[in-house]
Figure 1 (cartoon, rainbow, N blue to C red):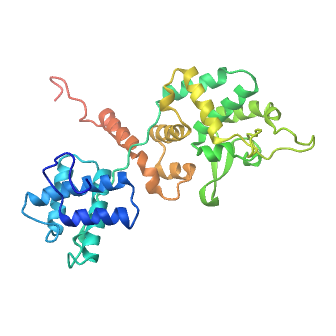
Figure 2: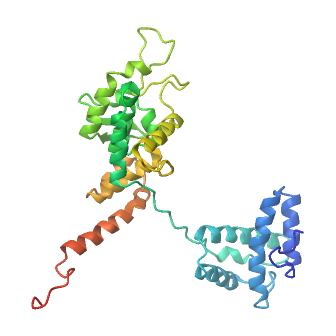
Figure 3: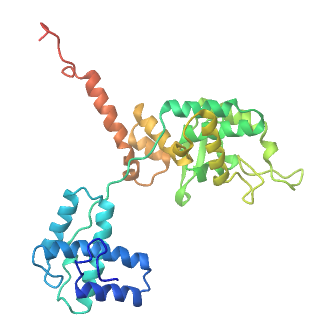
Length: 321
């Protein structure tokens, strides 16, 4: 039944909740799973109100804040709290529209802050194993994979930017890339010496990857051409190559993806002294707030710096005090 809690069948929901859920199903066409989710979320709040002798008709913002304070104290994730608040917002909006109430108490409630998850990244040793495994591969495909890996780790490009690099993106000396990023914004990204060398070696075999059926005088505009419909290596194909490379390198394939390598580039760069503004420019972030997801690395670096360099960080031995 819609109007009863499965976890406690003796605790019926209020008539208003039942009407609200029926409206969601009949008028908005909400799926069964959606209705069940609303039912569970609203049942928790109804039980909270009932324990305080309150009904939805006379609950106020203070009770709603107390409810979410309790959830937070119990360790509920901000994302789950946000979902429950969304259910309450719709419910109280319904009560107001149907004149069960003269106000909407949720208007005074702020959404819980969602903590941003820390980016997943590989250790420097794991990345070195991936690069070494790529360089061990022979033939043109091995040279291409080594170039892709070196460029990705040297620049932190998005995978869509990497596979669709035009040949003209390379500077004449091969040490810079001009990247056309999100929103058509161009940025210049320096290449490491290993990346420059890997691309130069790969370009001697680039002809091998040209699309089939092209004219002898026809060239490809892409740095990493392929026989795909797009004319260049696809994101999916590179992802497959990366998983296979992880197996060869003895790195858990579940941990490895193009985006994880982008995070690894950023995290390792900060750990070795780069500043956030420079990293923002290289990653192509429009807002430095996006780049700040990597500040956990800076926190660790500062802790290490204080531990190693602060004059009072190390306990003085007997007789030295």
